[in-house]
Image (cartoon, rainbow, N blue to C red; front, side):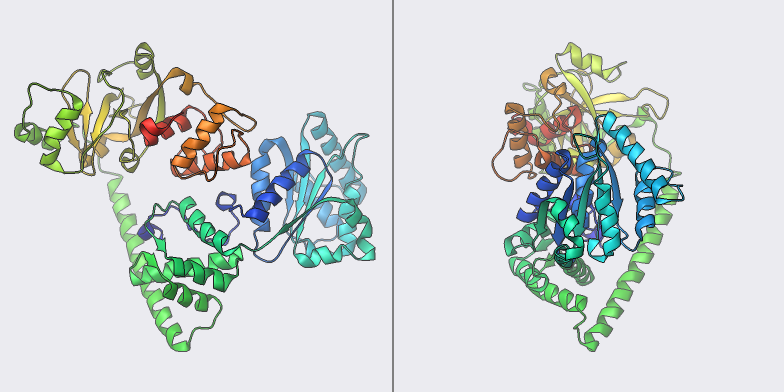
Amino acid sequence: MYLAYFGMRKYPFSLTPDPDFLFLSGTHRAALETIIYGIRQRMGFIEVIGGVGTGKTTLSRAVMEELGEEVAMAFILNPCLDGMELLRAINQDFKLKAQGSSRKDLLDELNSFLLEVNIRGRNACLIVDECQSLRPDVLEEIRLLSNLETRDEKLIQIVLMGQPEFHDMLKSERLRALDERIQVRCFLEPLTKEETAAYVSHRLAIAGSRGEVVFTRRALAEIFKHSRGNPRRINSVCDRALLVAYGRGTRKVDEHIVRMAAEEVVGKRRSQFRGRARTKTAAIFLYCLLGLAGMGLGWTISQFTPLPDISRRWSKDLKAAEETSPRHEPDNSPSTAIQATASVFSPVFRRLGGLSGIVVPARVEDIREVAKKAGWEAVKVMARYEDLLRFKRACILEVGPGEEGGERGEFAVLRGISEVGVWVQQGESELRFVSRNDLEKVWRGAVWIWLQPPMANRKLTIGSGGEEVQRLQNALAKLGFWKGSPTGIYDWRTRRAVKDFQRLSGLEEDGKVGPQTLAMMVQLLGEEAGL
């Protein structure tokens, strides 16, 4: 409902577990590291305890995402199962047929699968959530799974997640055998006041906010007061607070809005306010429906609007600009030309540095070959005009039909930019002004960024280390994705920061630093990149 108003791509405080939003407090960070270590070291049973809404399920999904193809994973979320149903559910989550009619058939199928996984050098893990709801006989069934082993190691690692009462259950005499097999124990605590403020900022940033919405200090203190650091309650209060702010037409969330939202969440509002809130919410909802209907109609119409012929891609504004722009014959450098004519259109034109002296023909067979001849490597990324506004280096725009249109596109070096248009250069021609509106008619987002060959061929991922990783972490810090001192080790924390950057930059979220990720960092940081 409020995404477009606050400039976000997804709801920041959704209650659905999403590992992309995982916030690592002190205890969550320790738990994530410990769980991953325990699984990789084949330590058998791992216990994770946390109260309602402390992020256990989100943490488990983050573990699964972090381990990826390295470990075969099964995740059991529904605890209301008997022994046979549990075995069948486990086999099904491991993508097995699970058609056995007896416990032995299901165990034999699982054992064969685990042996095959082990032979291939992989590991296997079972994560069971909401363990406090499991019957003792089902927990005993889980314990017996640990008997599936080779002479040297466990074939399956088992993570048991539950609320504090599950930890108490394990101390009973009936479950003593299971309790004694648990090698690793993790306890998730509520967030501190400082962590609560950082948590709110973190989720807003991951959702795509670039400062459009602001929670005041008093608002954050009020959030902590009502949530006591419980992530789920924080989400509920913040989501309602954003809705209230949206209804009021403000992007500033203060303590009064948070207090109103919190009272709504816990059901303590006066009936008088409830009536007004319902009326306002209904009005907002109706307004959004009408807006969506209008957007849908506009989208349908726009699909049938043909793109202008590329031969007419430069606007009439260009001609007007050339006629009204002051001439500076002695100096034809890009910087001088942009500054001399910028005032005709807008006082906020910005010159982009880099690629000085580089000449790129308007039409070439392969832009990569042009780059190589000049001693560079060309890397292609997709971007929006809003991304170009953040760039600090010159780059090359591919305009025209391109591959989808069956024709070869044209290339232009982006030398300057503002909210209203760009300065581009084709071949050895003079700089031209193109309005934003006309550019977006022929430019589909393809950008060619030129990097020095050593950087273009660099690849960093989990396990990498050294000065290159340290420079990467410094760059991530400048971009706002890294806190603290660089470690020089490409660990899970670095991978998470890289994925956050990739997500907000429209890149593939693989957590690996390759040419495209490096290219986008260089464009955003310019000379400050230090990569």
